[in-house]
Length: 288
Image (cartoon, rainbow, N blue to C red; front, side, top):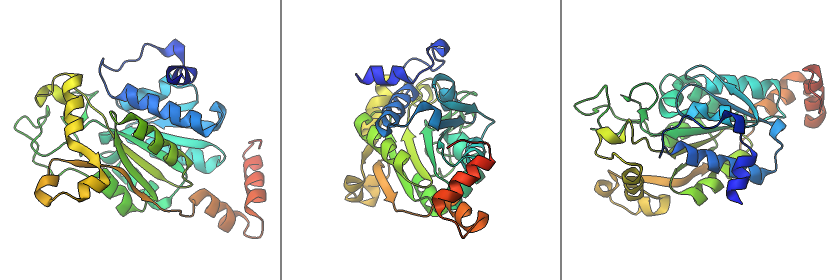
């Protein structure tokens, strides 16, 4: 049944996909499709946007309104889509470098502005498509093609960054905690505002082979050893937390969504929100 759900949303003429055998990204795609299915949204009411990278191939395989954009600009294009047509359910998929390196400025301002976009960050700790360079999330001392002696940069904690920038819904899961990931993505999709889900994925080809994790199974075992629920993580001492990552929902607070705020306060403050939205979309040649 779950396989049939996923297949019903795919462009089968675009298969087989380009992801390496054992890549975690396909698992995330499956979770996203099951979460979308649970919302009951029609395919034509969804816009899926990506930048550049392994994760950014996702829109090519999914039968929604899709857009494959330039590196780091997924959220910029997604914001334009949502702002010009607020009725669409907009999802932005990004890799770790795509989201918080070249796309970092877009990320923090999307969180600050609070447009109703769901941002899914496929974090495999490395630039997987372009040669295995280290990214802003590469762990301390990890090996990459550009850090052959070990990474000495302090890495970004994406949930902390999102919360600090003002996102109302912030969560993290992994590609191996599938039922929980399905539920977290579903909650993010239903959040009325900017929602961020970081998903720890795995790349045994670029990250794993350099860090004694050469197979998908070894990377799965590694994720099992480092990921634990937020409540369990908070019970650990500082030293015990060092090599662990908490997973779950960090923040879920209702906030005023930006496109609705703009319609209400800028276009015509004297009209009801629903009538403003209808007039706004008709002016943009959209039929509600």
